Length: 101
Image (cartoon, rainbow, N blue to C red):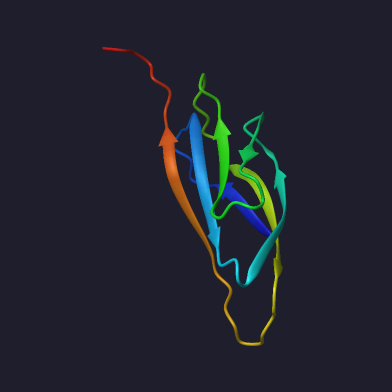
């Protein structure tokens, strides 16, 4: 199981985290979407690679830290001494617009 979370949050209204993995070693079997800052999160289908986990509240910045989703993987073949890598990248963080010019 892999926890997708936000820490040291400086304030967001929208965040999307990409989770990539080697599909020859892993099979994604479940995405448990959680609530973050009182709003449900969304994700791409389990067949996508990378998986996009998204939080959005266009009206309010949140400074909360916490979990967005739990991804459950099955490792195809477990070999002693092997390292299995899951990559995370934050692709977009936006803040609430307070005024327009």
